[in-house]
Amino acid sequence: MGASLSRRSRNRSPRGKRPTDQRDTCSHSSISPSVKGTTIQGRVYHDVESSVYFFPMDEIEQDRLHGQHFGLKALFNGNLLAPVRDTVDLENHCHVLDVGCGPGSWLLDLATSHPNSKFVGVDIVDMFPSTIKPPNTEFHVANVLDGLPMFSDNSFDLVQMRLFASVLKGDQWIKTLTELKRVCRPGGMIQLLEVDYKVGFNLKFYNVTGNQFVNKFTSKRELMRPLVSIMASRGQDGEAAKKLAPMLTQAGFINPHTDHRPIAGGWDGALSHEIWLDIKNAMSAAAPIVAPGYGMDTAGYLAYLNETLEN
Image 1 (cartoon, rainbow, N blue to C red):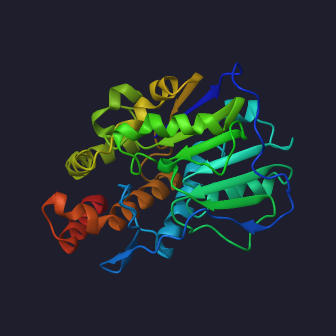
Image 2: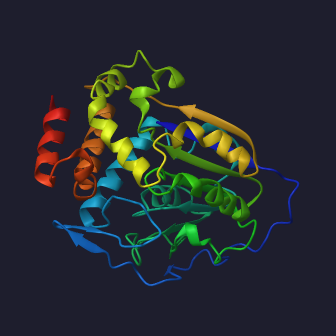
Image 3: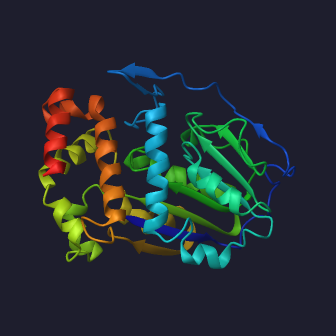
């Protein structure tokens, strides 16, 4: 698991208009119709042609993403990496953007704790709350690949985007990061978090060869190998996590900081169990899409997945 953050250089254009100045307004805004999705074997997947995302968009997936959020929060000791906490004062009327916010777990968690700041989420699917939510939050339906035209240049003090290796094609990363830089104010911060789907083959890079959870999970390399190949066939980069810092630099950010986190507590620890459960549920959720890449039908893939992970 890898996280990177970077600062936008201050020698840029002046700060633009903020996205919203009415902090007490409770609203749901969107720039495009809600994605209806396609039902495949009982699960609902979005049908946006430009996206290669292979996870569902239904209520079951919302529950998984909520649980995933709190697992990641525990893994990184909070919602923000230390350099972000030291730089972005959320008690001082900051504006925060979460790109690919999903059900809004990260955003809502922060918004509740920091009522003086404004928190804005965007996602290709409107699985986020539309009415019952903190008054300092705002959500938009938007595809970052189409840009974020509802936001002016230099609008946000902090921009987060996480777990986009399953969302973007390899050649879409720089374009996406460049758009995030546009809406991030000079001196602002961007925070990224990614899973390395090839971590079992990159242990020396992360210096985690002695970690019990990583060693045991990566002993199941044959489980992950087809997934990495499936991602490559879809144009996705399963190793994007270890490329975050150079990609940030290429997009024009400065001072990238990288934090690699193996799963703490060993295979049987509470946090490891939470992450293990999310891995299992995520791979199960993607079954109708990825099973053919394993040379199996969905039922056979799920049986193989359960047997491999349970053992």
